[in-house]
Image (cartoon, rainbow, N blue to C red; front, side, top):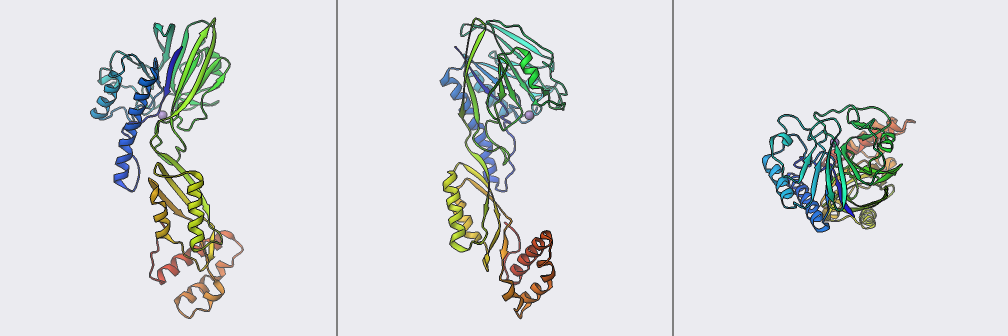
Amino acid sequence: MLKIIHTADIHLDSPFRMENLQKAQARKNELRAAFSSLMLWARSEQADIMLIAGDLFDSPHPTPDAVEFVLDHFRKNPACRFVISPGNHDFCAADSVYEKYDFPENVTVFKTSSLTAVHFENIAGYRVNLYGYAFTSPILDHNPFASFSLPKSDEINLLTGHGTLTSEGGRDCPIKPEEIRASGFDYVALGHIHNTPGIQKIGDTYYGYAGSLEPRAFNDRGERGAFLSEIEKKEGVLSCRTSFYRLCKRIYAVESLNLTGLSGEAILDALSSLLRKKGYGSDTLLRLELEGALAPDTELPVGKIEALTDSLFYCEIKDHTTPGYDLQRLRKDPTMKGELVRTLAPLLESEKEEDRLLALRALKYGLSALSGNDVADF
Ligand SMILES: [Mn+2]
């Protein structure tokens, strides 16, 4: 049985865009820690091959420190064969990491944009052919294995590549599912797309994206990790059992919470029940979108909401709520507040929802300023 691990899109040393600089640095360290976990896991599983389908580094010129960190991990597991197909971020060019550094013997790096193969007589009892290609600039406008086709055999044929599954063209190595079906590869390990539906099968070929190893932004949602596949082939017939392992340190989530008609404790209850139900805790980076019209005379309990989300690793709150003001009462107010409400009245009663929402926002900022409070949203 041949054990392969399929990973991609690690983007080592990529910056994290967060307001809290300490947490941004922590995330950068955690990305390295996720890579270390991947390498430890490969050793404990005694994986024969690790396919790294592009964007191992975030750029073609990573820091020497990041390169040494990666090379050291490769050296520590000489029994595993590592295969790298450079992606659009860490493309292989004259002065890039893949040309500048000597990689250990157990590492294969594909360096040209045409399909290339390396052959191994015996890995776990099989003749294994490793195919791949490289981005040699940020753009690769065709699929290098588009018209490639292998006959059925007892050999195991694996492809590692960075690209976009699409039926149209594109600049990120457009790959048609039909081209995968026709290729005759046993397993096509892809990288580039960070959200993955998992490993699928077309014709006799298993294929799919590994997804990113550690999520880096709010559009990288849910758990991240790598795939382990156990492959056997007898008389030309392949069996492949694939399982997903979570290796990420944190998860990103986006939630919207409707607070219509709520006030005080009820707002906090709604939020804590959401956090509990979804199991969000110290491993979560949450973007919380607050929606709806609050109960009359209610202000969003900002401080208490922040205290409640303190148990999360990081929380970004977007306040889209509209205040539920008692407009009848406010209209009669003899101070500037009443004047503001009377001035905005035509818009507040407008038939256009857009106008009403705009007026409510103006009222919210105006009343907040007149009460001496902060005018900014979260
Ligand atoms: Mn990419």
